[in-house]
Length: 275
Ligand code: AMP
Ligand code: MG
Image (cartoon, rainbow, N blue to C red):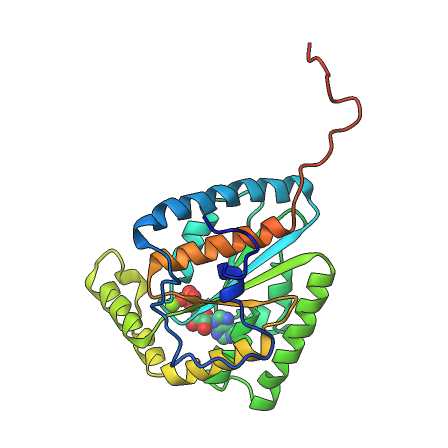
């Protein structure tokens, strides 16, 4: 089983260093990080059991907030990751928020307004399906704002995340990297499988044509916004089993490092006899 601090742990290997240049065209999205598929189920179960206990401790202690951010191109596996990770948690204390195209009301405010309102409170582990980062992704690719404006968002987001971490929010950001052919296969499956078809829209075909624009936007996002205090983890996500293993292991290791403790009992509780 992976240890929590060794240099070859996934939380070290997959962490994007501040300012690191990322070339996603050369990144091996099918990497298995030396892990064995046959053992993946057992290891995943182990990490999910760790997550169940850690979440209970975080909740009981009510000292830390943990925010897990998921980004990735369409069909990268954001929903599947949430199903697996959130499945280990007690839903009472682990809010999941999906960010869609802003409503008229949301769009009338600054872009962080709706995001900030969804940041988990002390004792909570929150998961974002898409996030503040859409402001340098879809907004950039579709030219929804002029460049001089979306470019400022890198700094604004870094500053905002610094404030949150200083106030006790642990931010863990996961970029799920799949390659072009994997997206093609997953889209085809959605089209062919009546049970998955609802997930597919013709707009996905148009978005897929913008692959290279999204790639450039993802690369720059990772370089500009992976910080010591709010790191990105670059997850090879062609294989669902490795993706689930990596995210669950990193989240468990990072929360374990916070060392959450059950609170001390009230004085007089110990030894109380209930009549
Ligand atoms: P899905 O995650 O498939 O449900 O799709 C949500 C859609 O909302 C995606 O196409 C996102 O790009 C879009 N979206 C999310 N946040 C924003 C934003 N800030 N501005 C514009 N579009 C957004
Ligand atoms: Mg979609």
